[in-house]
Length: 550
Image (cartoon, rainbow, N blue to C red; front, top):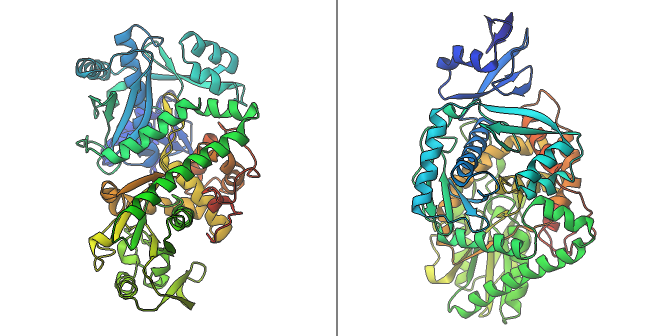
């Protein structure tokens, strides 16, 4: 039969798979092919090629391909643990969260994890990889899939599938080990050559390559403050009985959501109060620098922190670094020719330092406001002068970078890192990406306040992420305090706002695959109204109705 591959006509046998077709053109790709795209649809490599299909391929360096690799190694890890411990009922590992390029896993139900176990686990993974065992996928009736996972002791999946709308569930099998994963798999274990496993704290660290260098396993970098913040949030979720999406859905259906909202909002307020106490007790602090990646809730946090600072007799003044953006037509562009709003050069650093230095000297300064719709900085008569008890609360993605505030004395600055560090999991083997939560927040906010549709937000997101990797994450451990802005219930709320935006993206749009992935992800959640969310909540910054000007 005849197919078109990357614009060229190719002839192949009727029973040819996409994997076999990929082998013929692999030399044309810089990295390992892991998925096919045929007539605008993603196809796993074991599927047969359709006649007259227009085909291209995705590699480890593509977002979807990289996610596929990560997912496949995680299943390999779980299969290896099952082999070592005598079955999935005994090998209970949970994928917790990421620290840099590392995936932290914890043992369940008394499983002993030490250097010896980690070495045996890595060796077994390597043995399975050398055998080139196929990943197979089959559609199981939902009730049958629930019964399967119940027999395997995977109660988290049983709970998750109680809320499944579809009649069938795609179940993956690897050499007799069955599991469920949210997304695609590579064809066989022979593709899984790049990973490392070692014991870490009370669990394991699985190291995997990034998209930029998909054939290189990076060296693990300690990020103790980040780890402690993530671990604290995870343990809190476990204490209140919400570890996975199934747990959250149960709470909603049992009518306990209103109390859960109040409890978590109170927990965040308590943490904000602790940070305010730290600031007030440190002599000489005049600038509170709040930094974090996009859609972390920096603006709302700065307002709430300001209120807490007032209880200590301080007079705070929130300032958004975004107001120091240079005019849009002067903004640098990235390698794709798109505006790079995340780089330090997008900020008028000189003007910022001049204004802050003058304020520190007691002068009166007119502060700017950035108009996101016109793309220009404006001056609207906002004047400020600092007194003895005045303190500036400055939020922006570059707040931890001393180049942003080079003219200000170090002792005058208190640095805070804030991010939406999602610790809720779909189930024990499918984590929720922190970046996905922030993307949904940004999509909802941008559509409401900046006239940006979902397709545009998704298109900008890779540039945003690159900017975070370059300009924010390298500085996070220099923070004096960290704050996790995620609310465990928020994705159930964001769902009702995000879904209509995502459905507006059509097949053929470059952002279509990402929109479909996010829609499938949101389908796991029982949606809820935003009516019970307090007006000072960080979630209000994105869905609207905040009592602050955000």
